[in-house]
Picture (cartoon, rainbow, N blue to C red):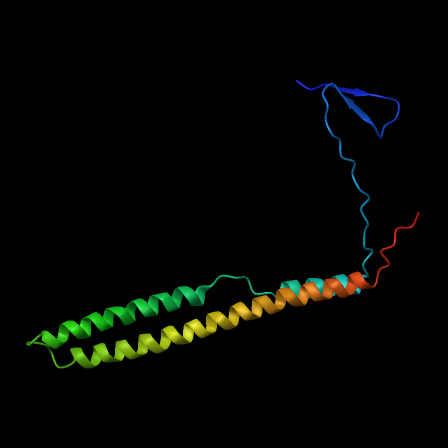
Length: 138
């Protein structure tokens, strides 16, 4: 068990074992203008949450596409099919392929928008930070 001994000087602590005690460093604050703070809040509220719903939907569309491929392969060897089955499967084939590609494109655009919004907030914060003199006043 470790015990601490206090001395009169509050900046120094004595331990019963040989430990290195790190001192806390001074931390600065940024007194930010209310208009800058409101601008940052507006930008952050405009960021779309990263849900990746388009990626999930494109995966479903590509699953339907793959199912249509296997159905078409199986239907080529089938002899007794209704006349509407093959055309319907071809429609499903092309529709799911186009939907899957379109949803992947939408997912990439949403990801780029989120990345841009995050960079925009960081840029604003860097601009605000530049307005302060960081030299320590002693």
